[in-house]
Amino acid sequence: MLALSACTRAAEPAAKLRVLTSFLPVYCFTANVAGDLAEVENLLPANVGPHDYQFAPRDLRKLTAAQLFIINGHGMEDWLGKAMKAANGSKTAIVIEAFAGLTKTNLITELPHIHLPGEHAHHHDGGANPHLWLDPTLATHAVTNILAALQKADPKNAAGYAANAARYVERLHALDRDLATALAPARGRRIVTYHHAFPYFTRRYGLDLIGVIEE
Picture 1 (cartoon, rainbow, N blue to C red):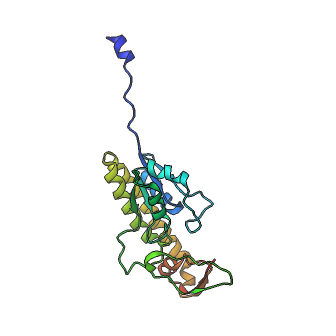
Picture 2 (cartoon, rainbow, N blue to C red; picture 1 turned 120 degrees about the vertical axis):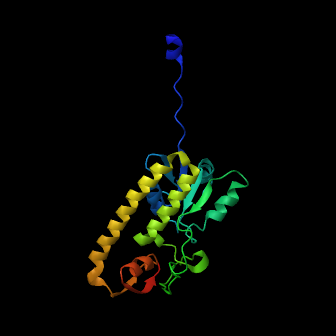
Picture 3 (cartoon, helix red, strand yellow; picture 1 turned 45 degrees about the horizontal axis):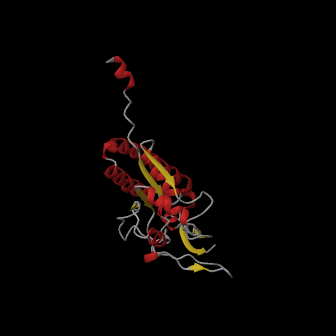
């Protein structure tokens, strides 16, 4: 019996939930909620932004291998339709929008742009600016949605995900307090930004964004 016990193979560890994210901010939120309980991979290379990304056939393998695909939403991933078409009926990851469920009062429509000669503007579906993560209080909304998605897909680790999310939300609250303190002297200042990424940031910290120069 001892010999048989010694020969018995140990149970294989359960495979971790496989999660794909669209680009860096969404990866950051997801990785902090997942911790070491899930495998999180980012689709876009670190040096490629979501505006410049072109969906490639090699990325289809990542999309079909993952169980969840967490995106920003609000038109940021406007290449997603092409990706799903390329799948051609193959089973792909369940798509989760991190910023789904925000009310109209949370969203900001695109500002008028100051166009430079030869520039190339970016347009997003629905008219809402998608750079929501730059307001830490809205980032906590994304964390809540990501937490719910991970818990639903992997209920056995629900408590661990919740603990990770709570710690990360505290860090976001601390960041919000630090930014509010640092930017208090600039409150009410009129500013122009080079890219249209900052309306949520400026609204949160009392800056007056009067225009945007497109890159």
